[in-house]
Length: 425
Image 1 (cartoon, rainbow, N blue to C red):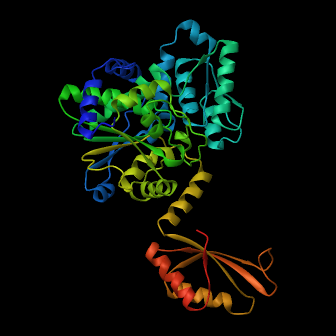
Image 2 (cartoon, rainbow, N blue to C red):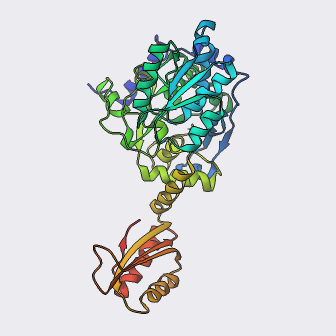
């Protein structure tokens, strides 16, 4: 039977005091371990997003953390608790980016040898950064799941300690230290929002925040956000069991996880208020917003909370903190994301026009575009192609525009002159 919102809230209040695999004491111990290792990342106010949502919005800037994401927290706590004999065997992990760099930084700080399996085709900046932090990198498989399987095989054969990215008690406790920092930095917070992949970050923060909220006698909402094409948590929570996805496809590679971790899932289903999803276009718009309005370089996985607020997915958020969980974005991906984000906002328009190949046609198109205050950023003029008839030409024009309404003005003007523009972007 489905619970109403009041029943759910009461259940979470009770469950916050029940026996969970990770406790507030574990998170506080992790905070002590990390005291000299991590940066206390800043809280930045976003007046622009606040005006959109009618609430006070802050960013917890883990994109400015060591190695560019929150992952170093959990990795260090996990490895700091290894025995001397375990440290001597070294550690092994698998990742396409942030976890790899977090493990590499933690291993270097602790003097532990680290081997990281990364998929073939991993972004070169992430590969170079992981090696730069001192880890040995082995390229294996074409996705993280294949790298993960190889890392586990290596651990079983050699005795190296496998450092899981999210399905570990110490890792979850380490990630939860972000929750303690948020409560210190924004004591009046009502809602905390963050991305969720396997669930380690969301689980750890919810443990810390819900326990502290109970001590304070108040309610603080904790909400997770997933990309809609990589959203394993909503169906899993609905079924109260792990439901793996058949396919994962999102630009947010940091949370592109097809199956929740059993450990974080057991916490999230008890404590987290909601998990919502956002589209790829909204993610692109959020990244553009962060670049333009907050001067923040954030990877797609780190921007999902901003996308959720911009889409209106969070009702009555009150004083809100969004965790910008990472800033490790490949420059080539950034180029694609910026173009997609501008197109989604109606600020970039690509049209293809078929016309008779006669002098003056391109000049006419250019005149119409200029008269309607759009800016041409690129033109492709093609006479040869499978869909182009003899005597015709295909012209593809890239335009800088000022929004969806302006795009329609330009398209209407072209049609009024007898052209038939086909929108590509």
